[in-house]
Image 1: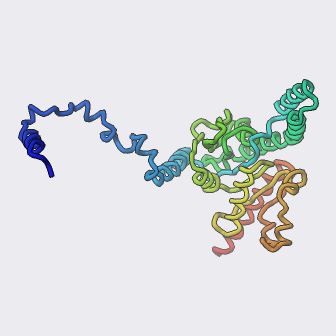
Image 2 (image 1 turned 180 degrees about the horizontal axis):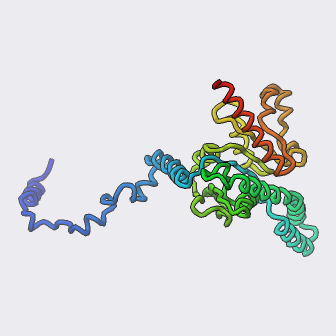
Image 3 (image 1 turned 90 degrees about the vertical axis):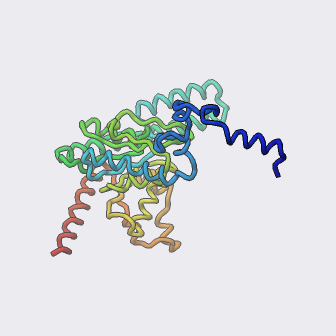
Length: 306
C-alpha cells in the first residue's frame, strides 16, 4: 500500500503537462535498439529464438545465387584440407626435417617428419583432384545452363585442388566455407559470386547434395568421413536422388580407414550396399563412370515412361 507522500507525488506526475515532462527526442527514439528494422537488428538475429530464421536465411541465400547463375547441377568433391600440392608438401617436409635435426631425439619432431612424409605421398591426390576439376569443367562449359559445376567445401587442400581445376578450365566453381575453431579461409580459386559462408553444418551439407549429380571423395579426415557417410546413408535409405559416389585411393587409403566388407560380415549392412560406391584410379575414369551412370539412368527412366 502506497504511503500518502508517494500518492501525492504520483498524482503530481500524472497531472504534469506534456510540456513539463522530459520527452525523448526523435533522434533518441530512432537510436534505440527497439527501432531497428528486425532484419537489421544483429542482437535480435543472434538470439536463440531466431535460430529457425537464421537456418532459413542460410538455406535461401545460396539457392537464390545459384539460380541466378543458371547452375542446374553440381559435382561434389570432398577431401582433406591437409593434402597440399607436392611442392608445398616437400617444403613442409624439409622444414620439419630441419627442426628434427636440431633436436633428433624429440618424439614430437620425429612424428611431425613422419606425418610430413605421408602428406608428400598423398600429394598426388591433390593433382588428381585438380585434373578431375579441369576435365569435368572443360566438358561441361559449353552448356549455357551450367551443369556439373564443381562444388567443394571451399577450403585448402583437396578442396582447393578441385576449384583450381575448374579455374584452369576458365569455368566457375562453388565453395561452401564454414566457421571453424581454426579459421578456414576460402581458397582463391572459387568464383567470387559463388563463395558462400555457413554457420550450420546441416545447411551446408544440404547444399552439397541438393543439386549433386555425383560425389567424389578423396582421402580425408573426420570431416570427409562425416560428409561421405551421410551421403551413403541417404542413398542407402532412398532419401536423396540417385547419384554415383566415387572413391579415390581405395587400396592406399580407404581400405585401411574403413572396413566396409567387415560391416557386411557382421550383418550391419547388406552386401548390396557395397554397390553404392565406385572405385576410381584416374580422374578420366571417374568422369567416364559419371557419364555412363547418368546415361543408363536416363535410358531407364525413358523405358519406364514408355
